[in-house]
Image (tube, rainbow, N blue to C red):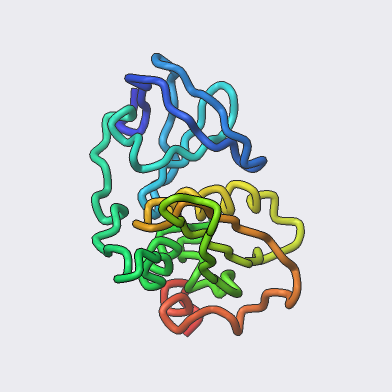
Length: 185
């Protein structure tokens, strides 16, 4: 085994790439870690490629990335802090590009709405985002990763990440920081 080869020490729920479907990888499954970005692990098993959340790092024999657990608290009215939501979105990456989805300019909007039918009232986060190309098969996996990270924010009880193609993405949407990481400036 190389230092990237692992055997799962316990069952983990993983997101299949590129479909975004949830799959159970069982104890004893052999995987190879291909990439670690934003606290998530992209692994390959005999069953395909999967993304494993950082909270399950111990099953891979890795240490959990504590930066993903938001240090923000909810606002005085109990609603989630929008800055904490944006911070979580900055931990989401397209596995093929080493720049987060916010700095890539893929997130078009984020809003928070109160869910009145819950006691105490909860909050739903709605995100509209795009991908770098309409043919990108990673959309469901990226959206699922974004949703799971948003749900870590205090006060968030539900999240919806919707992929849209309007307006079409272009390189002008990349932040200055993203352009620097990609060597575009």
